[in-house]
Image (cartoon, rainbow, N blue to C red):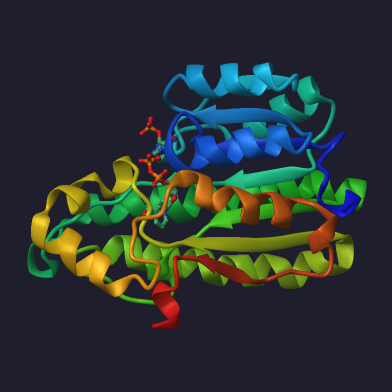
Length: 250
Ligand code: NAP
């Protein structure tokens, strides 16, 4: 199954100090890739885990809420790792409030980080990938790329936008050798869902609705990320792959 190997590949993962991004970055390294990490917090644990696997890594401090020079993040990865083959757009935030009270600030913050930065860092990476004739972009979408959710309208808008941008980029980049796909994680136990896990009623309602009958773990997303980053998925593009314990099938 050499097609699943990432040996010799250079990856950039956003928001990899914790949660899903951390699990993905470590899995890419385990599959053989060198991995640059871009985020606003120090990813000490992830850097150490990647180095322990014998892979090169790079710590790029970048606030992806709209202030970071995204082309420079890509440029630094290319310069220091010697190229860029895989971009995983994982960084994201969520803001919860009742629809009738939802503020413009909570709208803009989520759209800027989860959708606008995702598009423009992908554009910068795609320019490089098109020039080299190959590349993989993996976006972290959500169940709210398919559903409306409750009390998270800007998150639903942004993640539905991620699905649209994934397909739009896939269409234009497929003839240039670049595949663009997304993963839609189900309910995964991370900082992002801490409020839901702590809410007894919501926690029970969520668990009752998941056929697998458990919260997902960040590691549950790793295999799909390696697949969509590898040559094994060279004829897969524009897809939103749900990794959700069966939630959407129900
Ligand atoms: P998390 O533990 O909160 O991780 C989010 C990551 O994004 C962190 O590394 C965070 O850095 C980073 N980030 C947030 N804002 C940033 C900014 N302005 N600049 C740079 N980095 C920033 O949550 P997670 O669950 O692993 O989330 C990862 C992705 O999966 C997100 O896109 C999320 O929407 C998506 N997702 C999660 C679930 C779930 O159930 N957990 C389900 C579907 C989709 P800091 O630590 O500095 O904040």
